Image (tube, rainbow, N blue to C red; front, side):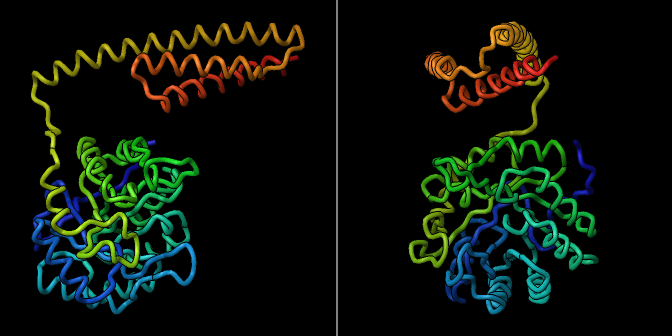
Length: 361
């Protein structure tokens, strides 16, 4: 479902913000010196927007939960001495009021907060009549409707300088990343809200600094609008998320390596793409027809099982089928994850059809 939201580009009279929009700074503001020195470093790297966590939502008590309102004075100092725009996370109405009182330029709503419609609505109500850009991180769990709902709530408060932050999603599965990127979700978000800028948070997706570059490049290849990268003058000594932060010089090197591809396509390239896409469409039609034929055979099998009082699920048959398909997929250069998901979906649909047959009078 396409959502009609009035979205304006994130803009500033003082700072020229072109794609890619880069936001950088420490996970947490820890001291005035740390904040100011990091800000000077990210400014030297060409960054226009400085970020720092003032209030830090933590899973368990007694962890470092941020320096609080005192840190907002340090952000004011950053603006004065570097000319950077400053941004921070807000999780409740008091945070919003304090941030606005200290001239914070951009607010963002974190993943834990965006998962709570009551909290988002409170923040939205506190922002009525305020002209300030607001970035909304995806909820912790892969729920695109919850993400869209949070964006709608802020939009309904009259905020139109909006962007989404894609920071990955929690998963019980063991993966390479701290949070699974699930790229298809922000892609679907862009389809639903076509003008909404998407800023990827590679730090929270990766969880480790050595994985940052590949995630950043992937975001740029998908024509996302920017990156928010945690940067600290001494990452290994950081009071939160030490492993995923980089120094300002490393940030500058990472940004210099990024390849920015042209989203515009000339006429000849468009014609070539149109031909290739036509081939894809034909193959997709064939694929659906083949699956339809497969399901017709499944229905015959279902009727046979019903007539002979045989259970639907045959574990050994399913195990053998999946192993064989994984071997064939590997030979064809297809990933194990893709083959697993594909045949799990086909298998589930087969079970559904056989279940319907078994329950027919």
